[in-house]
Image (cartoon, rainbow, N blue to C red):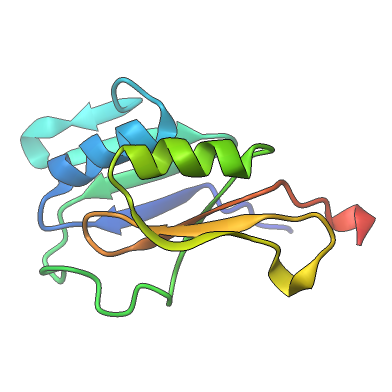
Length: 128
């Protein structure tokens, strides 16, 4: 039986602030669901979802932001890079071609908690 990764949860000391940030990144005026009284917010992103909420083990900024990264695909990496930079995301890496070519573009940002997230052109595993 194959498994389907359907959700990523980001723990935060300030989930409302992080949810407000991802609302801007994802171009969503509001989360797709929320339990604001308990500090939980969720966004649908394509086939998967992103949940943001409190976690007792999370304090301050992420000290190992490269360990787990969120990846969002878009055919317009350059345009989305400029839009997301304008909403205040910290730029970690400007658009580049990983591996030196092939037409794929990626860029990396950090969110207010220091978590890295990337934009990449859609990947088609059948074409490699």
